[in-house]
Image (tube, rainbow, N blue to C red):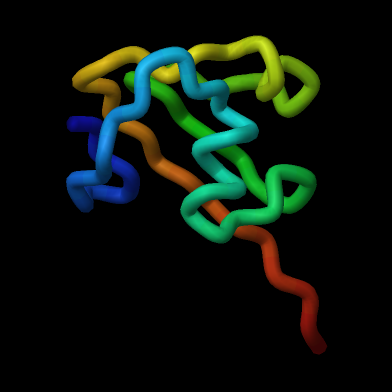
Length: 65
């Protein structure tokens, strides 16, 4: 299991951060992610594998006025 915004989610071995975000309905281009208390650079989302037991905080930017 992993935790995303304090909610337990299924762990899929080998899943990248981009794949996880898409699976959970986030747009990777509009998010900031903290993985185990470290901010992840958006340019590396395709390279970062989410480890089992990880804790993620995902901030999703929404436009408006």
